[in-house]
Length: 291
Ligand code: R5P
Image 1 (cartoon, helix red, strand yellow):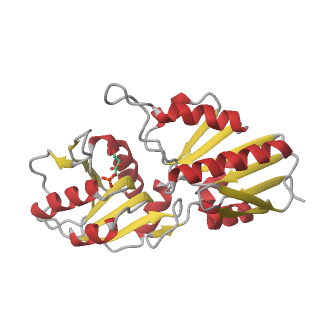
Image 2 (cartoon, helix red, strand yellow):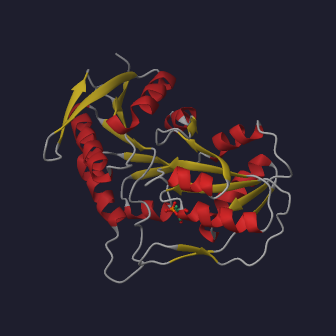
């Protein structure tokens, strides 16, 4: 048996398989039965290395179920391995990293305690919403960028005078990183989100995008509100095609359809969350971060 075991959580089975191949590790699959009351019953298929285990599980919906499953897998791995690394390609709850309104619970603080308590010595995430979330963790953390992988995909497209656009100021650095790798210009729009209703609005007045193809770069798409508002705004400013490059495509409540209706030509995302748009594989980038 290899010195490393990759334990595949149900939410990241394919990615874990790819990762185990790249690390030449032994793959341990998990079987999950969901009881009528919603409890997860997990059974592992195979032996866990005594030395090092890598648990792979994204925390997308059902978020709390996937969270408890990954904590359980870490706990089981720690019973066997001296070192347990948790790879959480999509870190759910990362947007709850500070108290925006009085009384709000900073859930990332809770997650920090839970991962440590379960037995993880290090957490690796891909494009976490903000690294502020990891400041609440006392174990080692690492955030990996999926931008170089996304850029490789976009380099194969034939685009007209492309402009990289972030739908908000918070994503400015991400857009800059993309633009640098892609060798193009970038801008960041100004977005306002109502903290109570979640509704978003674009505050930017005018941008010069006429006749240019746009690559909207974001870390994640949930309801699609941010992308839809930015697309409508850019279309009004007479841009050409709008493509979306995002790391995590949650695409909740029919978001894909709504985004296409707003005028987006194509959504390209990574396989941190499996789905129709998840065509960019980031297993190689994760493997490099582990070695
Ligand atoms: C916000 O700051 C994030 O970077 C995303 O733009 C946002 O979370 C996406 O959510 P939604 O698709 O619901 O607008």
